[in-house]
Length: 207
Ligand SMILES: [Ca+2]
Image (cartoon, rainbow, N blue to C red):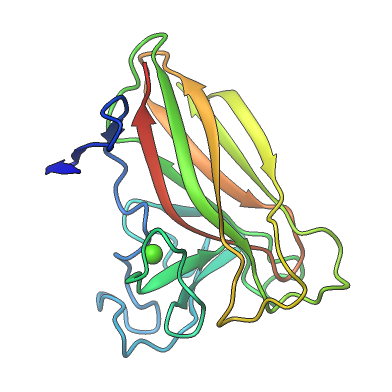
């Protein structure tokens, strides 16, 4: 694997990783201590809402209700990054009755016209959710020049034996077609109170 700044060729050499800032959610302010970055000593979970430090997670914006960063000292990190400090919970339990959070990022490159890109991310069901609870799921949305061009629902695979220290992570993927305009990516929880965990959002050019 060759690293060249944000350019990374995969082992296959056929996909080129494109820039997506802070897709691993490691850069964020501790919302209880504004301007202090989260670290091992932060008081997790760290909460962000549309009114409480909505841009505290670098390069992302909370656009609906609240989300929280959970420490991977307690919540098993996804296998693709065992050294992850934290992952994102798309809900903020107890907040605003529903707590179904949503976050948004603007891609820091313009996806070229008619070129295909794969967006991948790690996803899991928050193991704190009651297993009797209704289906837990999330939705991705892609906007190009403000127009919705792609949307999909993701339902995490899990085991009823999952606990914070043993989480069934899986990797999700969807494909978008470039339109040579500003492109925005959103993730939204479709679940009440407890929802999906996500981490390691990446984008690859595949054609
Ligand atoms: Ca992470």
